[in-house]
Length: 318
Image (tube, rainbow, N blue to C red):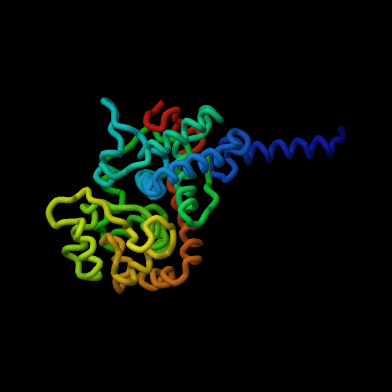
């Protein structure tokens, strides 16, 4: 073999190792050699889950948001409470509402069978969130992977850092800014509310006490959300197409039919009105911006390299 050929082979090996081995950064081909079937497994399992229950796509997407907003996208939301460990599942924004953990468990089982002790639960959640959006008619994006799983969780941080449905615009903008996200990212990512259901307790104050709401819409929601009781009764967040990932959420906002106070503040004579109006008439722009914002969201504070671990069971630290 000539010296030139040896050099080329050496360079090829080095490039391959750099592209596919563990490193300190997220990449789109992190598992290209160690778990090439990963994305197919996740997509197949999410397809089964959504066929069984359409709502689960929104539930998994919400899990991902809540994970990333509490000390980064590290799978901490997946950890169960134990006698010696307090997780985030019983924090106010998650208790009795965070769901889809069994779907992540099922995906993890299949991934472990194919590529044992290789893929993090944090990466599985990131991929599952993307696939849920796609399977409900939304945009796709390439998910950067290479995250590792947290060994800790923080119930107090979950209580304080996850945006609330009662938040005003200034609070939302600050919370997103603290995570490296812009006001426009906030408005695009809020479009996730085009799918899913919400408990009466999360929007009761808005439909009974706010004035920036369509009266007919408020009356409709009051039918299943009484002023006293009924806190766990469910209503679609998007009144038009709750099972389709589209731009109707923004049409609702323009018509003062946002379900949450935190939704309607995006279109309430404020800084985001023009973007909401643009998304309401241009679904392609919303889809493009949502996908870009999801990539940014997915890169909040990941654990990489030798930090964290690859959990064997998504619910428990190794």
